[in-house]
Image 1: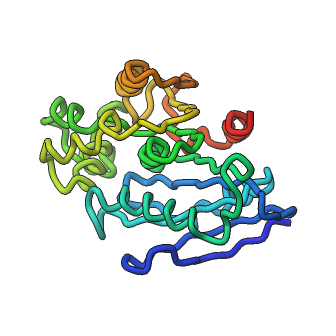
Image 2: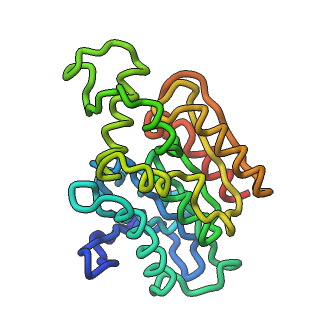
Length: 259
């Protein structure tokens, strides 16, 4: 039976917490999985991920689901800083007792949680799975000056074109987290500009017509190739984004991490 400990504080200054899901057979050498929730940096919570936490724990992972500051509290780089603060806390915690060769740490991220997983993977080398990570912000904003930002463009703006509706939300969460459209900030948000020196094994899953533009995924793949970094990419038909296909690809994600 999975056991859960909720609301363990990992950041006193910003009052941030993590939930931990323990597998039935718990030992000091249990592999650790960090799951980063999505929500466009404007919504989402660790509490909403309980079903996933249980599922990962049943697969044998001591599963960490941390919260991080949202755009209503802190704009860029707030959430990114929180992700690094969490990892540094974890590495010095009672839950990591062995060298990584004996107690590996993995990551799965959904949507912008996957963007932050990339940010962490480049610095710490954790094997990582990204479900629909948004990657490009500066060029995208530059090319979408006329797009009106909205969380619900279908009802608020009466849009009917699926791409336009997705673009409206993409712009909303991007400028919300960036605190505006300052190109210098947006460029720092771009995944292409992250320190990827320690990036290890990476699986990215994306749908052809989803929220995250496919051309940004292909651009990121080229960036990795130029840095002599490998990428495993699963490209799905349709327009499902992150949690939309998650249940179908959890087993595939776990299989990638463990083999």
